[in-house]
Length: 318
Image (cartoon, rainbow, N blue to C red; front, side):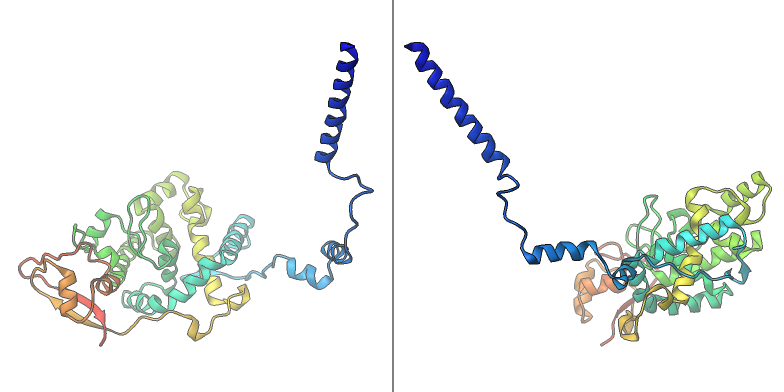
């Protein structure tokens, strides 16, 4: 009798187990609802594209220029590796749309001043693209501690006349930093005699470039084997120049209203120590935020002025 009861119990457990498995597996194929007409149509459309749709999905290829120069010096695009390296930077930067677009918008705010200073020092206009690839025309800080539009290290900045202290860091003054950069570029040209080498030395250093030229017995940047960053450096400059000079060709269609512009400012002179720049700003019709926006070289809430020294402060025009 006990055996019969056990048999019946085991049978019920088996039936229950089968029902659970079926429920977890879902309905059989013949029990599933057929796809609705809309679903079927969407499926069909997603797998069959018109030629127009296919064209819209294609990644655009650019017709690259046959002739490229930097500061009047020819780039040997007839050499395969040079062409490929240039082409790489064109596509990397043209398809980094957000970065390039913001750079273009920013350019109208800062380039007129940078271009004028370059011209005053007889530095080729193409060197404005060095500032672009160094910083994106922003007061950024590199992992190595280089700062500002022109990415000066502390010691180099001081060597070229910039004040760098706890309270004042003129690497963040893009106008003064551009003057310092021009002095460096002039010195570098006196050493190398080629603007391409001058630009490369801005990345690797004058001594670093000279050492590689001597080691490899090659005076031409395009014939040197360099580290990844310096090897790409000139080609990034060339790509920025090409895209900025032909923006529509690369898909950038900006109108005058799309660009940022430098606001009108007034200049005040501080000749005495100010222990509270926020208070000073309010007394002069503005606030600490605006003071720092227009004068990012002020690094602390106070300004110590040594005897015989003065500082020119820019503020929004009334």
